[in-house]
Length: 166
Image (cartoon, rainbow, N blue to C red; front, side, top):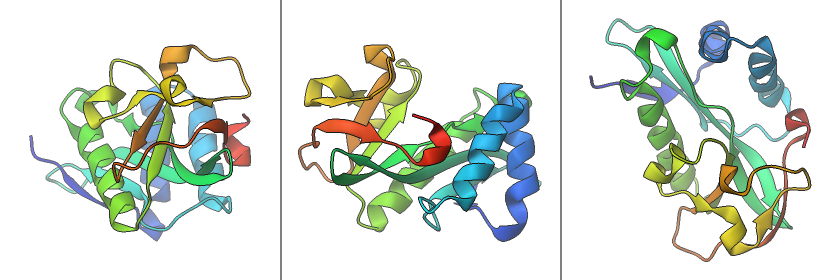
């Protein structure tokens, strides 16, 4: 299926919350996304929704400001897709659109704490290979990083926005 993607608009918050709650079956994930919307780390245009042909929002990806050491970077928040639309490309479409929007804004680096079998398809690699780490204990293969520009990745500890709690 071909998904339509667009930046999240002001009226999309309830639909995005529904997608996140249903995708993770955990209101805490939706609370995180809601908190990131009100955090100073919010960057307009880097929260992307995927829509079904009927206009229903079925997927969501959010990039927000973080730092690797002192270098500005972006953090990919939990990508969410309604259960009925998972494994159809809606999540991939939202992530690709968010990464393209970030690149268009001149952003250089993105980190993600996620599933090591999913994110490499977008170009993410193991962050530790570049000296990128977290202050919290996470599996090495779960923290991944991507250079949008081909510039060498910075090294250092990732500082996430406060709502991440890391």
